[in-house]
Length: 101
Ligand SMILES: [Zn+2]
Image (cartoon, rainbow, N blue to C red; front, side, top):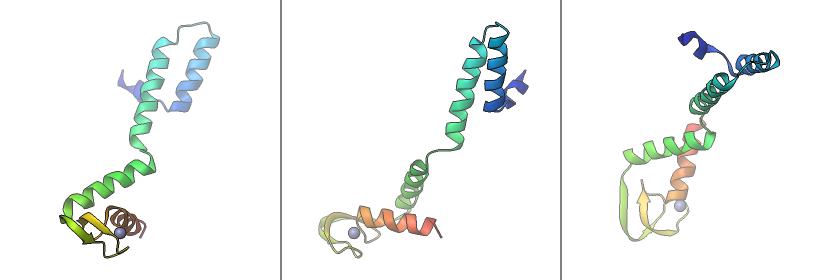
């Protein structure tokens, strides 16, 4: 019955506790709990992961320059690769600042 997948993690833990207290086998419930926990992790990726995806996405839409002695227009350091005229670091900062708007 697919309805069981709609258990929240809390309900599932309570169910495991109740089942255990009744002396019954919780192997299946525990594997279900593992699945629920995995799904939760997928639904709520770490903030870092979101940022990385966002950066990667914008990066793929940006022009990347390769060369020697390319100057980042933000920090003015020299790099051999620029993304939209900025170095990797400044590009990341820029992306994250646009995201927080
Ligand atoms: Zn820079």
